[in-house]
Length: 152
Image 1 (cartoon, rainbow, N blue to C red):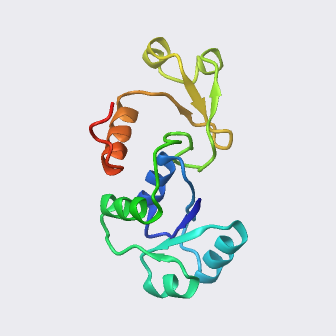
Image 2 (image 1 turned 135 degrees about the horizontal axis):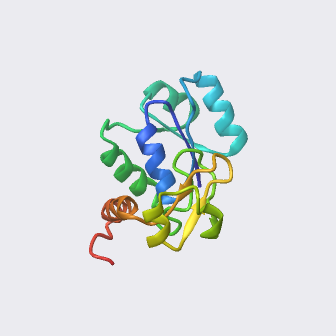
């Protein structure tokens, strides 16, 4: 399942990526026609806060302006899960690639290098990811929104 979140849904797009869903998010404001064309060409579901665009494109109107409510709505509507959680770059939307600890030695803080063994890298932007306290908070938040808050 692939999504296209319009310019009003940036945080939702980022959290869908955290969940592991391919979510296109435009760099800036894009015309409705361009959004519709990208969604059609790439087989994406349009998520928007624009009622007219949703109606025109047979997209999904996201009513709330609170990203947690938006995410709950999209999770429920499409029965999303966390099976591929934290597998995509939150910035570029690319699938992350596991890299050896040695490859990132000089690219992360020394403390991180010494205390972590698993690292992932975005093949597009080069951003490096590891499972730290920030990641734990994101995962806990996502599991709660998925209704899995009692699972560990």
